[in-house]
Length: 290
Image (cartoon, rainbow, N blue to C red):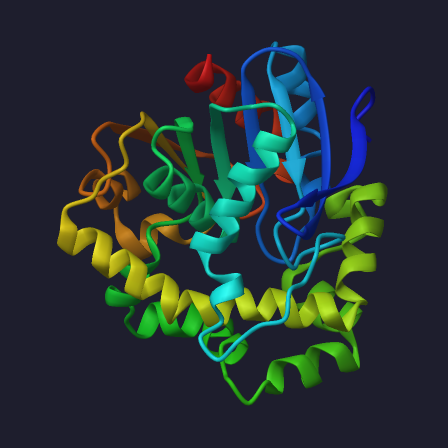
């Protein structure tokens, strides 16, 4: 995987960040979702590097090989604001003052928070398979609750999810989301397995969800009330075989009130489009970021 890319563990404001990077040209950071690591981009990142981009693929805070800071009652270390600040810090360490941000699933929340909080740093934004946290929560009905039940299970403060998942993480994740070697690719799958087998990683990933329904929602509400919007050009992408359109209609319309300039389209794929439709995804990203 990632031929000619460099794999390192870097200190970012006292937190370890595992990151892989390569290529040359304008910088773009790719942010994965749950329960993946940065290796989910193994078929996309080299294509972007070939298209003359510097591509940076970190493990999000708490995920994979990145640091897992001690949480607090408000789950603030795992807020998307904290994660976004870490993305900016990582890019500074790597020498990039301005860059594009691409985020999928949970990574899309970190991506748009980076654009909202650091408009002077983010040149372009791509959000994949996601809408703003507060929009998802306010539009939650029985269909959302049935399909996305894990949000509420993961978010329970009594932490039943850690006990259930850590008892048999491979059965949990592979049976529930079909995370097989055939679907992920053998090396990507091996990295994914190493992550979910670590109880500290499982706990940190769930803290991401606990922050999502609390502090992340409050930050979104405050930004909306203040009239803050994403300044940079934004692209919304979604998997047509997933449920984003069924839940929200046209995702671009959801993002329109959050962005000064937004466009978007679907990609024929299941939820993990970086693994299932890498060529079409890379082409869409290159065209928008170009």
